[in-house]
Image (cartoon, rainbow, N blue to C red; front, top):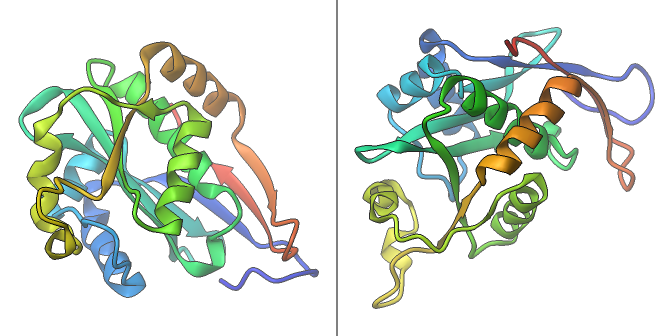
Length: 214
């Protein structure tokens, strides 16, 4: 899909993924070739879908993926879920979709994984990462001061692991969404299911509809 200025406004649906979509999700990551993501395994993508936190942005006309976002276990911890692996294809960027994807997944955590606290781990060494941190804070996340060693178990997947300075544990920031804020964000997601998005600078537009929230 090409999101153009003027003419008919393109449309996309943000929909829950199922386990059968796991290979399609991995193919999307390979196609978009993001150098800053520690892409989760096939089983990780299946866990994400199985637990309601795997979502895909699909072109209404073609059904093709324009973006994905997931949620994953944090090591052996049963009290945490990490929201991550969010990636948008270029035509869907700069429209504020990341905020919507955060809210929808937090809604699902609230309704399906209420025994787990949502965290997110974001690369703070790039401009894109710092923008993502701002979006996460805008949604309701806040910096975590808790030591969560399990977060670093997936550092082996990170493409930046060889560039860390001596003694540097990670190039990412860990943020957590407090319970009170989680409930507030879930209510916003439930109420806001249709979004007319526009980039005021470029004029790029997209009508996004969230479908499949219970």
